[in-house]
Each structure stands twice: as C-alpha cells, then as structure tokens.
Image 1 (tube, helix red, strand yellow):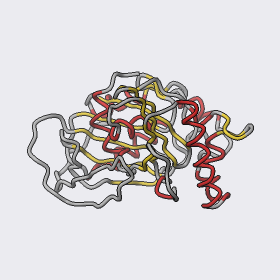
Image 2 (cartoon, one colour):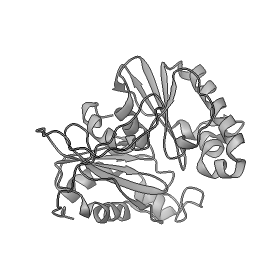
Image 3 (tube, one colour):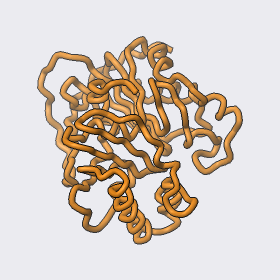
Image 4 (cartoon, helix red, strand yellow):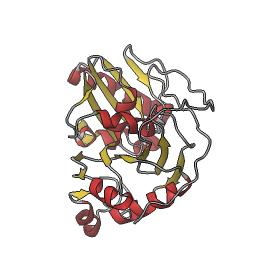
Length: 280
C-alpha cells in the first residue's frame, strides 16, 4: 500500500497543558524549522485520530478522526488509517499509539479488538489469531516506506506531557484504562495495569472503563477515580500523575496535589517525543 501524495494545509498550533489548565485553541503559523515531519496516529476503542506534526510538535493540519470500525483486524486498521490520512500533508516518519501491550512495535495484546463487537463482545478466534504478535510497526513501514514507531497509547500520551522530573505516571481514561510510567524522562517497560484487579475480582477496565462509567453514573465513577488515585500513589509513590484520555474531561472535583488533567490531543502530540525514547 503506497502513501498518497497530500496537499499541505494551514498549520494549526496545539498546546497540551500539564497542570490541569483549561485549553484554548489558537491557530498560529508554526516557525520554519528543519527536521522530519511526523505522522502521529492515536488508535482508540471508539475513534482513530491522526495529524502531521512539524519538528517543533505543532500540528500541520487539524486533527482528523474516524470512528473505530468493527470487526477490526490488523489489515482493516491499516486500510482505515490509509483512508483517514489522505487529506494530511506529506510526512517523513510514523508514530502510532495502540491500546494494548506493545513490545518492539509488535502487538502482544489487543483487548479492544478481539471481538467483532468491540471490547465487551465475545472473542473471535480469527481476530485473536490475527492480532497475536502482529508486527504493526513493520506493517506501517511496508505500507508507507517510512520509519515507524508503535507504542502503547498511554505511553505515547505520556511522552507529550512529562516534565522529566522524578517518577511520572500517566493514566488514560477512555474505552478502557491505560497507563504509562516514566522515570527521569525515560519510558519504563509497559504494565497492563488495566487487566489487574482493582475492586475484588474486577479489573481497572471493568470498574473505570466507559461502560462502567455510564452504568455507575458520574458521581460514583468519580469516587472510583479518587480511589484509583489513592491506590496508585500507594503502589508507585509517583511524583506526578497525569489523567488523560477521552473521559479525563469528565473528572470533577478537586484533585490531590501532584495530579493534573491533560488534553486528549496529547495522544497525537506525543508522536514527536516518542522518537526520543528507547524502544521497548
């Protein structure tokens, strides 16, 4: 699959707050800078988003989005991405955040995509086989003839917002729960904390995922988020915790010191800083 020639659109500046600040979009011309243009892709359980970033991390084009199609095999994912990015400018390399365990660009777990109905459906043996150790990174290199990096989506978001001081934990709240851990600015090996028991035998995904949020209601769900923050501080003793993902905007009330909400655009903007991280 060859990359399609694209027409460059006006640059859109995008900023990601790291202290829970309110986001205010502003369109400004990015400075002329030499370096690679990065296609950044954020794959989620409900939507797939993409943009092209200049070397400073500014979006060359407003973010494009499409609903995640189901059933989603690796081949359907790549085809969907190819259609999604046709309006975007040319790029020199690819960064992709994936909601599962990723090691060396290879998918080890794809919990949202093993069923034809999505995360809460019955696993389809064909999809289980298709995603098992699928080398998505190499598939993107083949599709576009460009260098590529694939990482867990929470790791990608974290790369965009961390300060580089101490132990920093990123938790994404969306269709499921994602986590990324950084120490002194370096990405640590990924942990699928979402699959670990949180309340009794129920996992973080089952208690804090989008289905659970809708069923519990805003008040109960926010109480659970507070419990999660306490548990994770006891477990990691982090210096800073960032809450991201589509449902982070639904977190209400005062947050403890050292906890902040980040903009969901971090899933795209981390595409630049991912290249500064060692491959895990």
